[in-house]
Length: 189
Image (cartoon, rainbow, N blue to C red; front, side, top):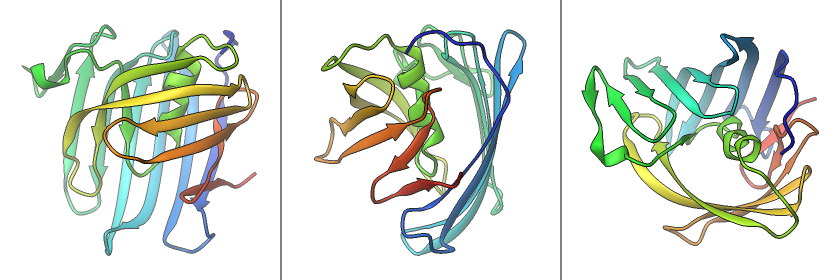
């Protein structure tokens, strides 16, 4: 997407069906030449209710530099990146995450915005990426391969997991934030 000034945004999503099983509030704030993104999610995964607070720091190119997650059940995850694909957790290198630039937190559509904003797009362009996938509610981290395709740059992108048959066409607003993630999340405007 074209570079735009980084501005304050406050966003909310619900579970796709509007039930109380999923709700998220996110604040996106300019900070230190990039952004600080703070979100709170309540939801259910595989029958388990969870509460999650997350904070991301991204640089001016939308590369993830720091991730902090905490669940209401006490799980905590802190990761830092050099923005070039090297990661550390609690001061220790995470070689299994080498090459990952973005993160994908299972419980939020917000993290789909990161590669959409970071990459340059033209109609039909597909980009394969490796990223840090964070499972909820236990906060396990693994490297995953995904593909994003610009169906209509600036408004519609196809997300594909390259490790399963899952795909979704994500509509986004003029700043690249997900509006609808069919079957999972719906933005509350």
